[in-house]
Image (cartoon, rainbow, N blue to C red; front, side):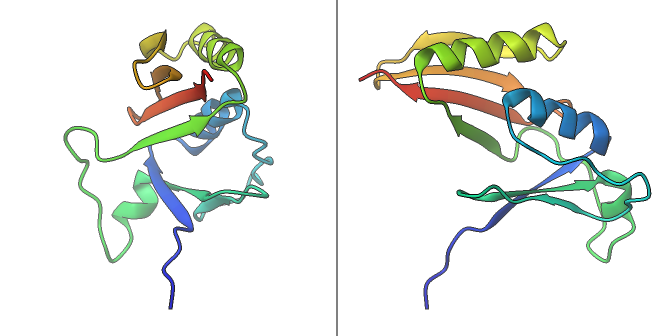
Length: 130
């Protein structure tokens, strides 16, 4: 039996604000119904799904919720080109989300940049330079 990664869940303070950030990255996340009160999953046509759960939802679950100190996960998104890394980073920063690292050509052969989502999760953008 194979174990296959399926979903990375992200706990967020404000679902609408978090989804707006990930849409800025270019993810085609559909609108959420106004009366939606459960977890929200974004399942792309390829790749791993992203799940979004609010802190309030987690606090009411049997698992409970204690806000972590420091980063527990980072997400990396492959872009089609170095120019797309630059453009996406600039678009997200212009919308008011601070970057952690401006785009650079890395020693490992990728154009690389880092942002933070509204809840502090590190979001990396990269594209092969070759």
